[in-house]
Length: 230
Image (tube, rainbow, N blue to C red; front, side):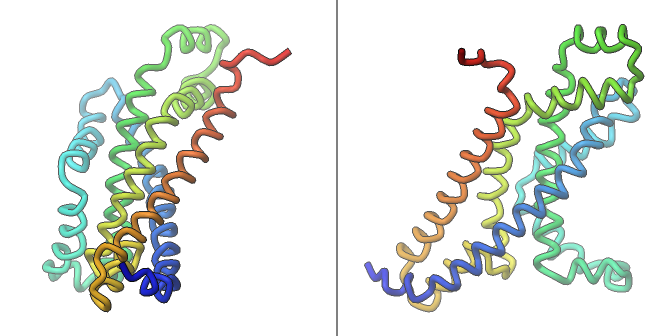
C-alpha cells in the first residue's frame, strides 16, 4: 500500500472536505426550512390541504436520491423553456443542482419525522394549553413545536448522518467533494484502496462529530427528564 500518495494529495482531500461540509450544512438548512411548513400542512385535518405535502413526502422518500439528482442535473436541461429562463443559471451548475436535490430530499425525510412527532403530541398538553386560554398559534409556538423538536432530535440526527453519506453522490456529477477527491486520486495513481479508505476515514470522523454534537444537544434539551444530583 502506497500511503505516500495520500499524504501528497491531502490538500485535495481537505478541499473536498470543505465542499462536503458546506454542501451538507447548506442542504440541511434549506431542507429544514422547507420541512417545517410541509410537516404542518401534512398534519392538517383537511385532506385536500394535506394531500400535496404528503405526495411530496411520498415521492422523495420513494425514489432514490441518485435518480432525483440525475432528473435535476441531466433532465431539466432538455427543456427549452428552462434554457431560456432565469432558472438556467441554477440548472447549468452541478453544485446548485446537487444542493437543490439534497435539500428537496432531506426536506421530505425531515418533514415526515416532524409530522410523526407533531401527531404524537400528548392530547393532555394541548387541552391544558387551551384551558389556559392560548390561541392555536401560541399553542404551536409554545407547546407543540418545542415538544416536537425535542422528540424528533434522535431521528433527525440519523437523517443528518444519512445526508452526509448521501452527499457522496455529488462526486458523480463532477463536484470535487470527498468522494470526488478520492476518485481523482485513484484516477491519477490507481490506488483504489488507499484513496477510498482515506475518504471513508474522513466520513467516519465527520459522523463521529455529528453523533457527539447531537448527544450534547439531547442531553441539554432532555435535562429536565433526569433527576438533579444532590
